[in-house]
Length: 137
Image (cartoon, rainbow, N blue to C red):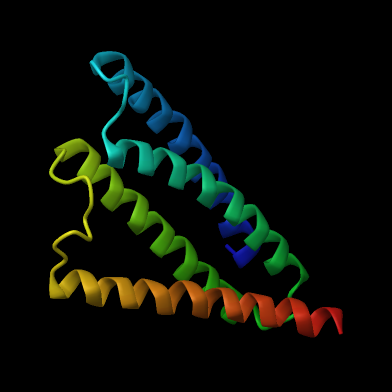
């Protein structure tokens, strides 16, 4: 599988997850006296939608880039893996209903994970974006 194919498949998986978490969100909204789903059910639904379309953009970047295939794939794996990890964590919080803000009392390990996410997502994107810029000029 190359970076383009991974991005396309990931887009489909995130979109399907958005549809399924949308059903979950709807069920929580109809069962709630306030008509509102748990915050992390809502966040997991919206994030899945956003990541589905982000992966389409990344697929286009991978398609245009002329960097070595292994480097493009590494960048895509970093991006897609951290996107998926974020959605899974949001879904777990939604299922458990254990918090409405995971950053209210963050642990040291959460801060480390967030810095890791920041580095992987920005770094992965910069690799693909550099590949696009060098291919176009």
